[in-house]
Length: 491
Image (cartoon, rainbow, N blue to C red; front, side):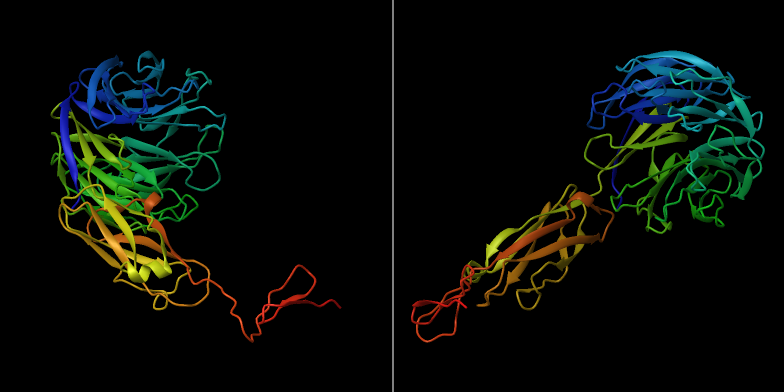
């Protein structure tokens, strides 16, 4: 069962989106949330354990929607941008390093909603692209290098009522490209970048009904940036796999709950591929889907997960510092943010050390590997494989390949029985690699393998009497005969 501990707390009025970064430089992730009716952005400082304290609000122009983060002025601190739907501009908030912000704005098109920042002209600083819902276009504002921006230019979105966008290199040429959801046309516009802040006309990709949220990532492990879009009116999420040249295969879909709004990708279960989280604004829940590594997604067993009323924006981050990704949603209808702390079991294995071959016979004959996990509420089985220089059946008896955890159990041992012999040989190793979990726990990539050593104790000896044993000398062809006498032969 997927496991999340959920808490919620009040922020401003009608929060729409959120983002996470370390805003005050203390090493913990903090939160930002746009408050549409309050006309401000909430700053919430994290305590490193999954708790957040509303610390301040930063004024926005009018009707802030999307918030994104980045170092806009190159001073090493994380700044933020917010699109102002009713102000037709973007708030630029520069951080002084302690989560206090100075504010300016950049004019863009009509009723901006979606927003992104990236270096789109290749000069090393972060630029602005906004999605202008009312004017069916995108505004591009290039950074002057110090957190101020040149006047915005526009490019058509390729459709009607664009909502959300992402920036990535879709065609593999090293330049930033754009993808944007056109809500009224049921498609995406793909705009290939020229590398100088300009873009080619949009090519269109079909989605489901009412595309709204959009994210990008390599979901099938082929090295290309794929797309996932929420189909608000169809109650689905569409997965579009990149062909590698900026074109996309026909979509596949997964069913969500009602009115999916936003979508984010991240490795929730620690298996190395990108999983999916969708906010369902019509059912006040989040859907979680696990990736099979090839871009196929399966809903978590307890999905969807209840949050506040009408969740909109999502962000993922390790809020409690335990090494896995947690989730936060901005809940428009309840004026809250929800925090879902990931408590899925994380498995690791420790080295078994070294056991001498002779000692093994008298002391039970085992190398014992300890497998540990972080959460203990579920009964789960962990599979493993054996390798190394030792040989199964000759040097040891191979166990079953599965270790079981009962509910509440924190550790378990893999015991490998050794087989002593009188063969003169080097010490040998047994390597245990954890390979899978029966439930929705995951294996920590950094601690998935451990080694134990069978230390050889069969000592080489030379017996007396008539033998043919000899020891090579230092270059003088010395022979050691069975009677113990050394005779020096040179030729």
